[in-house]
Length: 99
Image 1 (tube, rainbow, N blue to C red):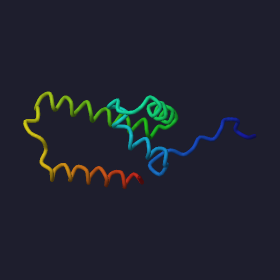
Image 2: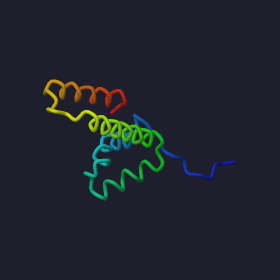
Image 3: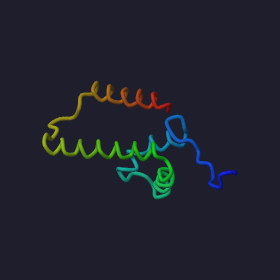
Image 4: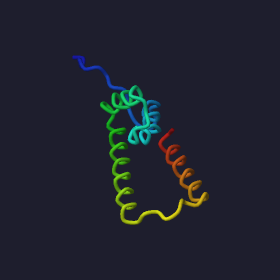
């Protein structure tokens, strides 16, 4: 007997739609996307456990960084070399995810 439910697409780091969502989640959480882009992300994460997990992880990191900043406000901006190292680490993480 055949399953009557439609087959769900595979989700995860190799899925192009997941990569697109991963890349836009910070903008989504910061309220920087158009309503149409937000709707697209919300539709995707409705059926994508890996993206939901990544979104919750990102939210947790944001909460932690806000509480850290409240306790220890930055007195000066990060040095340029530190910013470059952080960007490189972010790009490496995206590559490991298959982006």
